[in-house]
Structure formats: C-alpha cells, structure tokens
Image 1 (cartoon, rainbow, N blue to C red):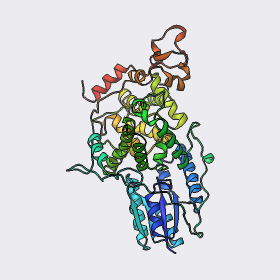
Image 2 (spheres, rainbow, N blue to C red; image 1 turned 135 degrees about the vertical axis):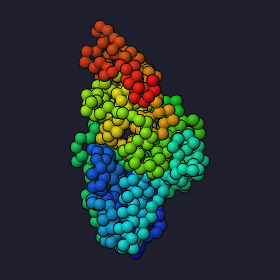
Image 3 (cartoon, rainbow, N blue to C red; image 1 turned 90 degrees about the horizontal axis):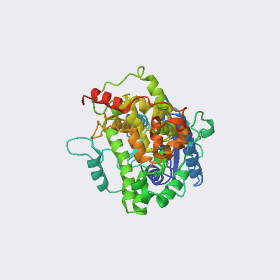
Image 4 (cartoon, rainbow, N blue to C red; image 1 turned 180 degrees about the horizontal axis):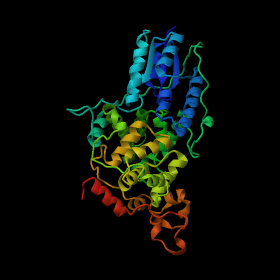
Length: 457
C-alpha cells in the first residue's frame, strides 16, 4: 500500500487542486495535512480575523474530504518536523505541496526538502495553484521580472491556462495517522463583528452567484463605493478556498464582454505582485524603489496615525473606509487606494505603518498583495506615476456621489444630504454635525509638504 502526503498551506480546497490530484494518482492512500506553523504566528501574521476565517476554511475542507471518505489531519509545530513525522508514521514516499512566492515560503520549501531527503521522501512542489501563472514563468528580456504591470499583462494574457483538476470522488487516508482537533472560529478573540464566513463551499456559492448576477456590469461598477459591486472573493483567494485558474476559466466562460476582462485583469494584478515579490522578497519590508522619502516619524505623527486608524480624520470617505475595515475585516479596493494615499502622501507617514495596520485587520491581508499595493500607492513601488496624490474630496464625490457609502459607515453624517457629505466643514447652522471632527490637515498644505519632500516644487 503506497502513501503520499499533501501539505496544505494557502490552498484550502478540493476543487482544482494539482497537489491533491498528483498525490492521488501516485499513491493508494493520501494524508491531507495542515500544519499550524508557529513560524507564521511569530511573524505577527496570524491576526484574529484571518485565524477565524482559517478555522472556517479548515472545517469546510475537512467536511469535503470526509464526504469523499477522507479527513484532514491537523498538527501543530515546525512544518519540516511535523511533515517528516507524518511521513514516517504512514510510510509515505512523496510529499506534494503548492509553491510559495514569499521569502518565508521559499525557506519553508527548502527546509522541508532538506528534512525529507534524509529519510528518502521526495518533495513535489506544484506551480499555478495559488496563482494563475507561476511567478517567473514569464519574464522580460534582460531581467528576472516585470516591474511595470501593463507589459506583464500583455504577456500574461497570452499564456495558455492549464486544465482544471476535477475534485476527487474518493480520498483514502491511513487510519493510523492521527491529528489534533480542528480549530474553531468561536475560540478566536477580537474578531471583527462583520467578518464573512470562510470555506470553499461558501466561496464557490458566492462565485457562482456573482458570475451570474454581477460580472457583466463589473467594468462600469467596480469603483462604486456604495454599490459594493466588487466580487468580495479576495478572502477566499487568499486562503486558496478558490482557485484563481478556475476563476479565469469561469469568468471568460460566463461573459465575453468588458466585465469579464476587467475582472480577469484584477486577477492578473495578483500574479503581477507575486512575480515581483518572488524576485524581490525584501520588498515586503523595504522600498522597492527608493524615492528619497523622509517620512514623518511615528512619534511625530502619532496623533494623526491614531485618527486615521480610528476613522476620525475629518475626511468622510477616508473615515468611512477605515470604519468598514474595523467592522468587516475587509475594505473596498477603491477605498484602500484612498486611505493609503491619505496616510502616505497627505499625512506623509511611512507606508509600513499603514501596511502593518491593514495586516492586523484584513481577512485577505497577505504579505505579497498588501505590501506591494501599499508601495504602489506610496510611490515607492511599481506605479509609473509615483507622485500622484488622490484627493479624498474629489474621489468621494466621484465614487460616492450621493454620499451613501459615507452615511453607511459614518453615522454622525447620516443627516447630511447627497454630495455635501464629503465636505461637512462647509456646512453651517443646524446642518453642520457637532460630533464629527474637523479635518486633520488642509489638503493643500498636505500636498505642498509632499511635493517639498519629494523635491517636486
């Protein structure tokens, strides 16, 4: 009886799962294994919202495997040691896992390969599991990665998609291999009250409904803050409860118009960031491009940072977005751009401060997309217009013209009508709310400071 191990990381699903399929083809029995890695917790990445969503994903994965005759084995400890122990217990000769893109993921693979080599177990690392196109699969001549999105997108769009792997009908797991109880969502403290439920089943249901009802209008409506017309699939993609390859297949199959291509383009942004981070792993903490910024220190900007985190900046669309983040553990993509621009360019605070706060709350927060999106907005990343500054008043009037998004999240302004909600300081008399703060800074003053600091006078 031959046995293989499938090490789950950020790919918590049974549909379109190349490592699981390869293991089932190679062996009579398979051990689906998830290791609760203390190394991840030590990085501060195991935030409450993601821990709660992870618990949902693991419970759903276990249920899917049990419906096929299997189960999920959960262990806690260093990954290499736990995988090696499981392989020894069941006599496995192969371990299959998805490729990682971060420095931590690469070190995990190297450590695991070294640990398994000593006991004659072969490690198989599979690409195109957490991304559509593997990092490094397409490169420009003369360098190891694309630093600008548009030429990357042109190449990426021409790459053939791999075929989807069907979900297995049967998964046989050796009886002798035991695991720990699954973590439970209700055991996690400090979870955002509006956090969505996780798991592949819920992700697939949401995907099917969204493709049917909303994809066609995505190109025109995805920036509408109040309309909330984005897919909200990012948490399921982050945990691998949905396959990005399947999303591209299904989006293109469901609709041939601009809505589908606009959505696929957003999936390409994920891959773009993964290939940047794979080539430059230190971009998770260092400027991808140095602009000579002299950021205000956290001590100097402490009150401004606190107001930004709490949604008390005096700029309604910024405050609405920050309050949505705290309540849901998620934020509309347009709002992410606005809040990041306000912190880094209007308040002139280091992007790492904002990225750290987002990682404390975002259910879809990951090192690759979070850090590189923040760098893009801050002008230290891959944006070809690094000096652009998003005006929160202009952006609010454009993407929330009737003020519905603001009034949804900033109850102090619920009685202010229409677009006037974006400039409450201009109101007078009983119309002006007395419990909403004045703006932290005049936008013109913030812009002038940013230009001086960047040498753009």
